[in-house]
Length: 328
Image (cartoon, rainbow, N blue to C red; front, top):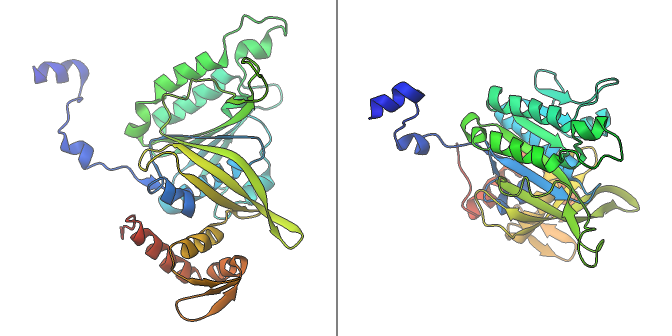
């Protein structure tokens, strides 16, 4: 029986230990999100971030890519569907390599406007032929079908993007973990005009196509300015984890973005050090284990930036306390 199966379908029968012996790498987003997610995002996942526009989803996605490049040497493919990604956006993410050997941008050009079918076919090709890579879709909400791009505005009988997305998800869902490809998708929220009290509720502008295939999903409710005196230096994103591949869903996290850096890991580590009692706090003053006193979290974050070995020591302590530290 087994020989007949192998003869007909190839090497498809595996020892159960092959699943146990082939663990997936856990990719880092940022210190606070990693802990809330149970460690991070497993490679081979469909990872979705949704929320209002300008809330910080793209910066979070780019920081995730930078971490994957730096720590796991992963190649990045970025589908710039909205066409708003600028070089300064990429240069504003610390550790993100723009070397063409490490990152490629996918986008329309003059005379060649890519439809939803073409964009998703390109990503599908990456999933099937580029093992270990990351593909960012920014955003699923901005996709337009070939019929929408070429048809008359009055023609409502066109194939919806939701149907195209549903087919795309079915094609990649089983391949992602096998090829260890991670797809990071961004979606936007829009007013729901189809229900009673329309306009008062928000829905994702991608329908339900992604809902049943997603492995990790973050929902940003809003962001608030991160100030230094009278100057805005970043923003704090309020996330809720709605789906997690490792940790429990439902957790709420405040993640800090610093303009010109991406996720401000040192500020996030400052929060964690205080939350886990690794440093003592008296008013605005913070006392390190060595007795040194620092006034305010911003200065503590600067201290960690200037002393990366101290950052790493505190990171290990925090991860040990939550049972996530692995020397490997």
